[in-house]
Image 1 (cartoon, rainbow, N blue to C red):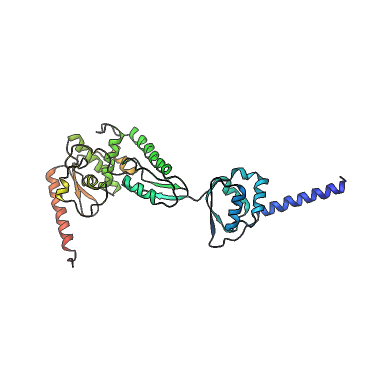
Image 2: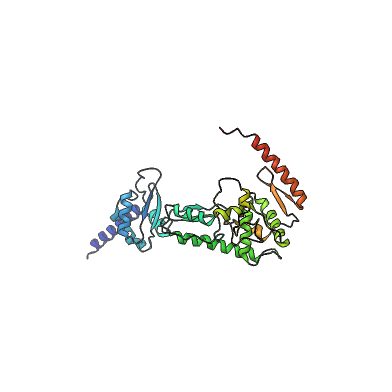
Length: 328
């Protein structure tokens, strides 16, 4: 090959490389609707299939060019499946970078504190981005939290992350627990934490209520917690009415008005604060509490003081009832 021909070839190759680099960095097509475009790339898809999906969605202008650029850059072996959001006019460089690093769309699942395990299954099964079925976990085995999931993730795998999170937190709290607590194992602490969780929505009350229940356990007093009655009757589903006297006498193994000590299992999945309260309860001599009409509770050391508090609560209830309009 003559020197002039070689020079021409060199220039042509340089121009080709420069053109490819320009196309690689250049803005892509404008999104057909909105500010971005969502594309779901299936697991096991070839580079050619991915390129075709991106072109069909309007994310790239040329599938063959995308295919060629993945070959040149070596990116084709590292593209990850999943759900992606591509901003309008994203360059092929940005698209490939997102696909190589698997920056998929993350969906959030929030489990509120005090959710029961039956309700956890309801949340997971109703989520449309997840796949597969899921068993009902043991009560108290899940940590209520907000979890990030991706489309196509298996529900059992998500549940496993939720239980692993609880186990990790419980092990940490148990190792640092207050000495002398009346628990035979960490699961007892979870059981008490679940009762504390259902008794109050106020974070600053949880250690105090936990301390009160610990005092009762140490003295051999029954816990007498209303939420345990409900769990024994409905597995935590709302009764639809106030607790009746007949229900307070219900002979379920969860009714702490009828049984000594803790119920056989937790009655819900307690959150971080309730777990911490059960393992670091407040130092208190209190043994009784009742609602105060403001969303919180009033506490007492003695039964006589408690009776006065109960009487005040009944007056508050009666006044509230008098202020309601009559039923038609």
